Image (cartoon, rainbow, N blue to C red; front, side, top):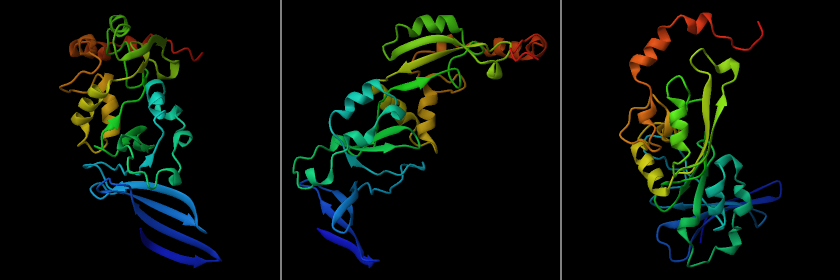
Length: 252
């Protein structure tokens, strides 16, 4: 155990300590205490410091140890629906555990709504929601054909067509698809490898799924074949009816 610092302020003693974890090489835990009681902790690697950055991105990693049951949440819920604190393992219960499972040492990255594992810095696949904003709509896609296809897609848990609210609609953009998607770990890793050197990889990885304007080598949901040709899209853009005849439902 190495004590990093200790000071007294208003009769409250604050301590920061670092422990090695069992027989795991390069893995340690940083603990913050107040009057001898643990207030918080985070796990880090000497190879991957807990405040390190990933490639060119702005992602900073802080890891914690979680109960195995949290992985069931990843299969059914979006990041924003998961109560990470509920599955957090208290510091005292694993400090001296020589068999700590690194696959359960995770970083909930709240700014990007993704979960990373300390073992390899890859994100873990969780449920993703898509709708007409940056997703599939009838302006850029043959939406009915795409809908029928997605109903049988192995990564799509739910999909339905919905009307686009009048304030976001236009003459040629009136419908979109709402989807609940869970990519396999293999596919999600493939997607991450494609974007991880981008400045904002957590944004780009979701765009790969169904944004029509993304030109990429992978097509995770197989939607490229339902994108309208550029000639048809340009024809729509030039059509004057887009402004003159569209009823936005606003009532004025």
